[in-house]
Image (cartoon, rainbow, N blue to C red; front, side, top):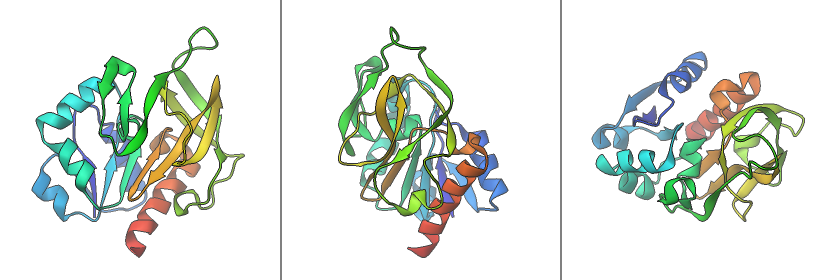
Length: 198
């Protein structure tokens, strides 16, 4: 059973629909007792980092997320909130992965980065099984995570940034797998397979 974190910045409908297409069992919840019973977590996100963190804190979801040992997949803003802080609202985030989110330089190209773009894997990981550098995925974001030792894959828009990240049981993707067609579905299936095999 997958638990989708319910909070005001969650892109819940499209993620739920993507899991429906994969015939996955899931619940959408902000209840800590319910989330404690699931096998893994999907942490979606769209919107403003500071507002999202305020909502998580109001439900004690921030502390729970930081301490869970369950597999967690963060999507877009969900991935960004894994980091220590963001320039967006000068906000302190969850602090699971070292680093600070930066804003794209709008003098160099249109911000936000929106649409289909390739990615380049830099490390092997089960979440990327069957996904190749030639594949396109769908992005919508104005802030980015710089590359670090936790980067599994990069994307190039204005500069190279982290497209997929991993630390311990936390995996994050900057793109929206639920809006990325067959390639996105494959990534979500890879996550489900990882959960089922653990």
